[in-house]
Image (cartoon, rainbow, N blue to C red; front, side, top):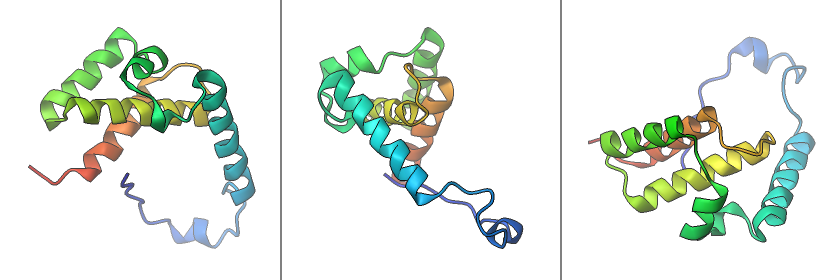
Length: 119
């Protein structure tokens, strides 16, 4: 996965951490998200098969159309769509949310988009 990280303004860099999340806090959220995944499906989201993706990565009708539009516009394969769904499920788990929201889906699409060479 490729993630583009914008430059951080100097005011934030020099603030010495009052607006940042500590590494320990991030680790705690990641461990909790992974525990949610294993509790839900017996494995991390990255290992879900197609049937499990259908079960655990359900989208609203609107979000299904959003993903379909991204597939059409950006030329994603079925494999890419499944990867997007697994990443969106993971993003939702980090919040923690029981269902995938449009913001999770669009974030996952943006990560996948960065992996593809420009057309």
